[in-house]
Image (cartoon, rainbow, N blue to C red; front, side):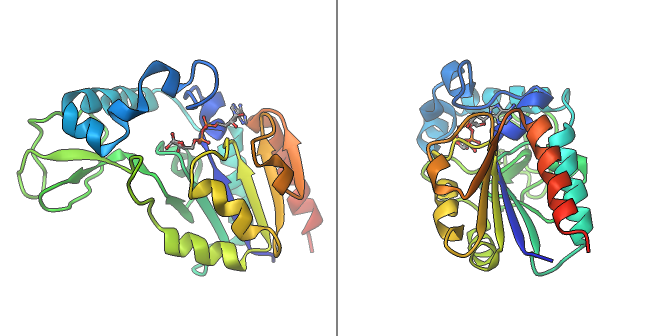
Length: 236
Ligand code: APR
């Protein structure tokens, strides 16, 4: 079976009811990313950052995975549990919709909304409720927790594992991402040349011309169709 790396962005969660970042009315038109998605913003006004992530955590509890998330979990199941990343799902999203759809071989390169990080002991507890400046770390008791999310200017997570999978993959699929934020936006360059590259998006991203193939439309339409066609092509 071919080796496949799939990159997802906010567009795959849009039809579950979560806003994207850069579409009209998106998150960055509602709040300044400098205020809530940078270490400087957190240092300036940690309560505002707490409120931003608390409201997104509450919203996440009200939505469910959609058929695009579920079809990627079904595709992974065909690859079987693999410990050498024959199938690797890399998401830029901090929601847990891929997990709830059943995806397992998954890395959150921008961290997770449902985790906090203690700036004293480094613990990263799972967290589904509100967090405030007075919330104590469950491990060390210090009241200095932050969202376990990668902010602008910070290093994305799991990059060695992602790069190794991109070097070895036969297929790279980018789903629901505007391809504007690095390093994720550069994955197409790392895959093209040796892998078949496919963009699945509502509309052509700025990197559209770099892909071998593309399908445009809503994720809940084009992703299940891609998975169905891929499995038919690879039925042995
Ligand atoms: N189906 C498929 N694609 C969609 C849909 C949909 N229903 N709705 C929107 N899209 C596409 C848009 O066309 C756009 O290309 O999803 C993409 C969303 O782009 P962004 O809002 O920029 O989100 P993303 O690419 O995930 O942003 C990357 O930027 O702000 C940071 O950390 C944040 O992880 C995020 C990163």
